[in-house]
Amino acid sequence: MQRDFPDNASRHQQRLLLGPGPSNPYPEVMEAMVRPVVGHLDPAFLAVLDETSERLRRAFRTCNALTLPVSGTGSAGMEACFVNLLEPGDTAVIGANGVFGARMCEVARRCGAEVVRVEEDWGRPLDPAALLEAQRAHPGARIVATVHAETSTGVRNDIEPLSVLQETDTLLLVDAVTSLGGIPLDVDAWGIDACYSGTQKCLGVPPGLAPLTFSERAVERVSSRDTPPQSWYLDMGLIGSYVGAERRYHHTAPISMVYALHAGLGVLLEEGLEVSWERHASVGAELHAALSDRGFTLLAQDGNRLPQLTSVSLPDGLDEAGLRRRLLHDFDIEVGAGLGDFAGRAWRIGLMGHSARRSSIVALLGALDALLS
Ligand SMILES: *Cc1c(COP(=O)(O)O)cnc(C)c1O
Image (cartoon, rainbow, N blue to C red; front, top):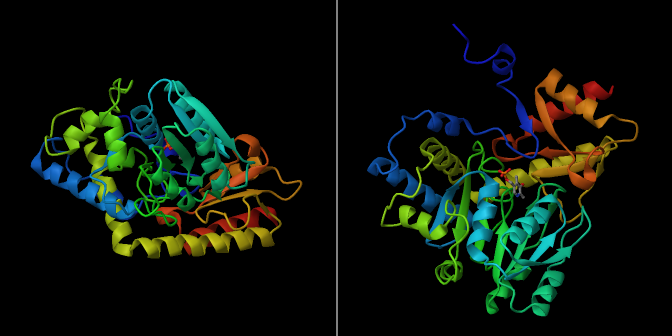
């Protein structure tokens, strides 16, 4: 008989995941994933789906009726927002200070939009005033879009000052893939019209769903489109009629992933959002200090550093790829390589969800000290 997994795969089930995601899922989440699969129209499943949406509202801090997990990873959430809110010829103002802001520009371009790109150097936060100024220069812009937690650089972009967009006809779209559950996010208070996240970062759930929420303004924008969204799969009108009261079949919900997200949100809300933010903040600060002590250079600007994702350049003379390989092979610890401008000279260290605990730091620093001595 063939074994289910080759030897080297089964041996590595207990990795400590300290990269930019996936993070280690909460044990409760993995237990939920082995629940029996039921049908996507089974009342027992629909009750779990409804409760998942309700938990998402609490996590996003919103009353938005259209709040649901999109099938697919965080990128599906990004795509769902852009294809539903933009039509060919529309103008979109987009902040870009890292890989994910740049990706938003590309997705908007593929929707046929004219992109007004507001740039900032890698490692520095976007200036909200620059985004608002771009919107004033293009008052017909349909959206202003920005990434809350730029996972490629470890920078937090300030969202709250953009709430004044509510006084305009321009919608505010925010990527909260790495921020939801990890740092303060307040969808309604900050006037966010469309927000998406991912399961495998600070929610402590495997990759596979993209939590999403649309304000009433965003829902109106979708229903008043001249043309249907070019993606049938991510059409929020059609998906909304399955998740909503009509329960009309659109596509098969990923049952086990919904159970997993339901359980992960249960862990988060039982801990308490603020307590989770505080836990991420304290382990992040501890890691920042410990790495600085060891001669690493933090790449994100002080004051806007993410606790859940630390980007650092290594002390001179260290081979980043070789060290990263040894951390993985000798110590079962994964850290991430630098992306884009930071490739080849930096690491990205995640402390997200279940991985955001002191024991992760102790293990990482112990391994690093052993490798560097
Ligand atoms: C990880 C990430 C994404 C993409 O999510 P996937 O799950 O990889 O599709 C988008 N935006 C940000 C900020 C991310 O960190």
